[in-house]
View 1 (cartoon, rainbow, N blue to C red):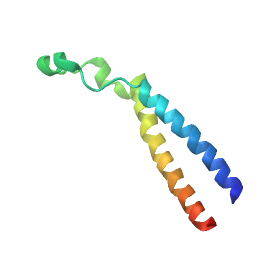
View 2 (view 1 turned 90 degrees about the vertical axis):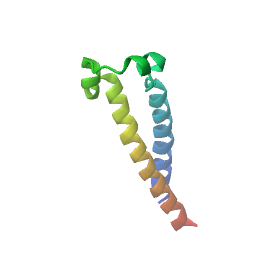
View 3 (view 1 turned 135 degrees about the vertical axis):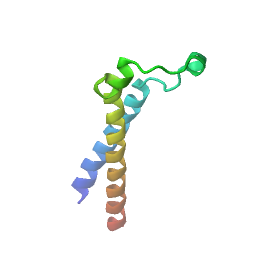
View 4 (view 1 turned 60 degrees about the vertical axis):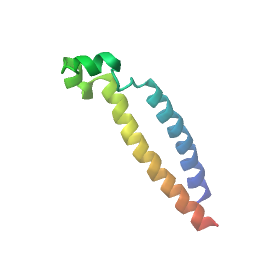
Length: 83
């Protein structure tokens, strides 16, 4: 059981660092004053966001956070069982 805990802990730390880096790589959502006054126009990039680099980063953030929470719960259960 200790081997599983060590492996999950290593994955947990690496995933936490990866999520932090991916979040910092993402662009801001606000367009500033120009976007608020002029309105946000639908463009080719906004319609195909899922296929862009930004869309990929968002998907990794979403699924990485889910896996991060699951590993947190598993590690917590393993610690409760041990002690």
